[in-house]
Amino acid sequence: MVDSTVGDVVEGHGTHVCGIVSGNANGQADSQFLAAESGVAPDAKVVFQDAGDSSASGYLNIPADLELGVYSLARGGGAHVHSNSWGGLNNEYSIDTYHTDDFAYLHPDYLIIFAAGNDGPSYASVSEPAVAKNIISVGASAGIPENGWTSPQVELPAITDLATNVASFSSLGPTYDGRFKPDLLAPGQQVVSARSEG
Image (tube, one colour):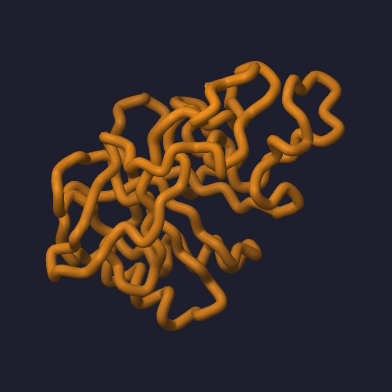
């Protein structure tokens, strides 16, 4: 997370997520999409942190202290919302979960969001730190528009047209101590967004 020259070159997942959040298709000369297909906050500024390594090994380099090594750095860069698409392997209260809860509690102007995980359809599969108490964890909804695709290249369905089923891969609650997680669902399949060079 320290090297700002590497970028999102291996899989492009971070770029894809940033596009969902803050992509802006308006005024793009080569865009095949309409301005309506921009991200949910197209004028937002992004502080990008990538915990992956450049070897495509699949391993993450997560700092030992998320409060100091991740959240404080992003907040210092002007971020007030921190979206995370990574997680651990277990449905437990880990040290990463503690650091996440603590930072969210001490900084009420800072919203931390975690993907619930991709370990569904098993129950109690939401992973840490998405089990944290002071954050929002998000599961994936599935389906294609109920009225079908009219043109997959240009016209994308409104979110209200998507089926509201939980995606088969999405991790499910409850948490290790019986709390409801994930807190909400968001489209997790057939989502068009930005693409990186990776």
